[in-house]
Amino acid sequence: MATMIPETSMRSMKKTLVLIAAAAGLALTAQPAAAAGGHGYALRNGNFSFEGPFGTFEQGQLQRGYKVYREVCAACHSMNLMSFRTLAEPGGPFYDADQVSAAENRFVKALAAEVQIADIDTETGEPIMRDGTAADRFPNPYPNATAAAAANGGAAPPDLSVMAKARAGGARYIYSLLTGYVAPPAELQIRPGQYYNAYMAGDLTPFMPEGSEHVPPGGFIAMPNPLMDGQVTYDDGSAETADQYARDVAAFIAWASDPKQVQRKQSGVGTLIFLLLFAGLTYMSYRRIWKGVAH
Image (cartoon, rainbow, N blue to C red):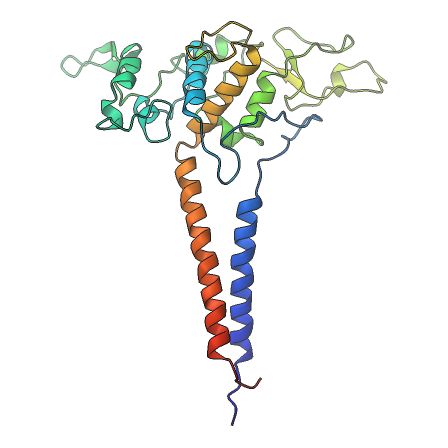
C-alpha cells in the first residue's frame, strides 16, 4: 500500500524554499533610495564604491573625507558617537594591518593629541583641558545645544555621527545637499539667515508670489555653502574642488554612520550562499526521499 505524503508538510517545505529564494533575491537587488522626500530632484549619483551588496570603502577617500570634516565641518558639527580609535579599526580611514591595536595606532594617537578635551582633574576635581587620546570621542565645537543655536542664528547644527542613516538616500543625499547651493529664482523671498538649496526638503510655495505657476524644488537651510574650490589641500593629488570635497566627506560620514558595514555585507553574502546551498540540498533530499511514492 502506497504511503501518502502529508499535504501540510509539502506546503510547509515549498513555502520555506520560496521564502529563502525571495530573501536572497531581495538582498542582492536592494539599492539605495533614489531620492529623499520633500524635493523634486533625483539625488545626484556620487558613484560611491561602497554602494551595493559587494561594495567596499576606498581608504584614500575616507582619509580625504576625514580631512574635509576636520578642517571644515568640525567647526560647527559634532560627531559625538565617534572615537578617534575607530578611525584605525579594520575598514577605517587609518587602518594599518601591522598595528598592534586600533588604540595603539601612532597616526591616530597623533591626531587625537592635536585636540583639547575638557576633563576633570582626578586629584583636585577642577575642570581642566588636556590633550586628546585615541579613546576620546571627537570634541564638540560647542559646550551645549543652546550655545550651538546661539552661534548659528538660532539653529543648532545637527550631529553627523549617524547622518547617513538618518536621511533617506544616505551618502547620496549628503553629497547632493552639499552641492545643491544654486542661484535661487529672483522672485523667491529669502529671509535673513536662510539659504536656498535645491535638495533641502521643504515647500517654497508660501515664499513665492501669489499665483506663481512654478514653485522651485528644494527648501531653505540655515547653513551657508560650506565648500569652495581650493579650500582643503589634498596630499594624494585628488582634485581640490567643492564637488570632490562633498563626495569625499559624504563617503566619510557614510562610513562613520556604519563602520562595520563592509563586514556585515560580507557576512550577509556568506549567509545567503549557505541558505541557497541549504535550500538546494533540502529540495534534492525531498525529491530523493519521496521518489516513487504515490501521491
